[in-house]
Amino acid sequence: MTADEFQISGSTAVVTGSSSGIGRAIVERFADQGLDVVVTSRSMENVEPVAAAIDERSGGDALPIECDITDWAAIEALVEETTETFGPIDIWVNNAGASFVAPFEEVSENGWQTIVDINLNGAFNCTRIVGEQMRENDGGTIVNVSSVAARDGAPRMIHYAAAKAGLNKLTWTLANEWAEYDIRINGVMPGLVATEGLESQEGIVADDIDRTSVDREIGLPDEIATVTQFLASPAASYIQGQTIVAEGTPRIPRTSLHGD
Image (cartoon, rainbow, N blue to C red; front, side, top):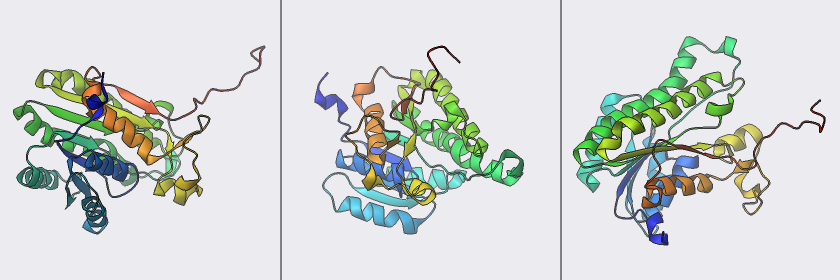
């Protein structure tokens, strides 16, 4: 293996939910690698500054597109505009997500549906639409951004945990179905990451995280971008259907030597 196997230049990538946080880190990393990228979220006001900042850096070009991933027609329009501008899509990252905190008995039918629509159904919509193009163009790569909540559960965020668990099984099962089309499908399952959301909820700022420390349970968006780059690169050629956990120090319950 050489360092070149980790390079993914010369491709076109779309990252949903890429106006901030993990999505922004991924789309910036891809552009730095030389990819032409689409920056997309539900608000053009949010994606335009990110695309403009990318265009000021050396690397690939950025195209801002407003898109609601729960809207099938909007995704089709995004794929069409991307293809007309950059050519066929080689890499698609299903990163867009949302949640809110509430005990199960206070989660309304609409609240449940909204979170499942964004975190699971949105990935289904995008994958169905871009997958048609990838099958016609001899393959591609899809990376799904999940959460450790899918594995561990998340009290007061059961809607989010359930949706992400479904996303993990979508990754696993579809990787089997679409392997014959040379489409690689994998995922990344982050733990706590110092995004704008975590800062607003917990007051944890990315600048306070010591990346050199091994013993920590909070990561940085750029660290998730690194895992995503690996999964999108030729270095991950023998990885299919896997969701890689990136959460720092394992959370192991403490027990006494006598087991009591």
